[in-house]
Image (tube, one colour):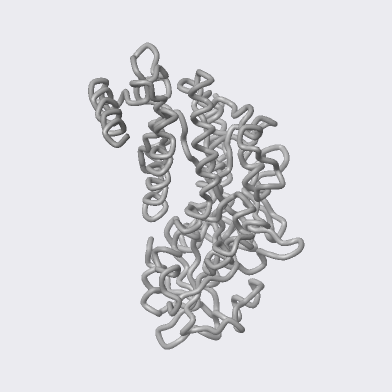
Length: 429
């Protein structure tokens, strides 16, 4: 058996070498879905790096070992996210190198769908045995655009509040933004800051959206008009501005990209905001005596509360997923990943599948608890609008400009909305 498996592997490797790395997804230029030595080979693109990238590689490797006898092989390509989306628009018609499955943020699906690159995921719910109640609502709905499932949920990643236990006790943790300000003012002094608010384009935009959505605001209205310069949006950005430039600042000025993390890990700031992947960066799963811990963002959980989050989704490409065999192989892999959600949690993500959250092994991962709580009350925003992601980027520039003191909060948001409207107008011409 071992010799036979080795022989199959050698034949497959030789075949793949013959056709070239860029043609690994299939057997010929004319028909890229033709099996290679009997194997249905699926190319999977993703932008996961760090621990989540390593974990996804391990999941792929385990899948390939388990499904070798069924002649299914997944080849994973890790591509930086921005590069990935550029390549999708330039290689989607090149069948020799285009992927079959792509993991992407739910916020990108509507915009990429306008480019005609997706095939719908008809039948995947029945194939996996998945129902809406089995998944975190934001993630389940995040893959549905205009009533059609174009993405299948992998995870939800909110922005939570990391804190230094040497500088603040659990009993002192704020649950509202007013309390947060009070705590930051109290703790700031002698070289210690409440929160080193990053002034460069960064996680500050997601904290802003947490505040905006929890206050009942939004990025776009029901007519897809940008309203991230509304009165409530200006109020929330003024709050962030005042943390740096107000009468009682709790942050240094001009904290560049990564500077907030550096000051936090140097013990010079009480709070730090980021996604669940930082759990592994800080080694929280491995060190029960770590000085760091995680709590939900103020005003993000509980009845009537909400917060902003992202969600990774699996999508299928129209030009490569063209046969029943290839589609079934893709669904088989997606199902396998979903069934191994605990591994994804250890990688620093909140799995979209609810059942895993009730297991003892998951609940023993204490640092992920705050993110899991937030995931259940999360919104992904108005991402069924094709230009939501571009609007999100414009908003991020506004947040950066305000915190940097380039513009007042209102000027920054008004400018961003005007720039976005002008961009959409040009795009539609």
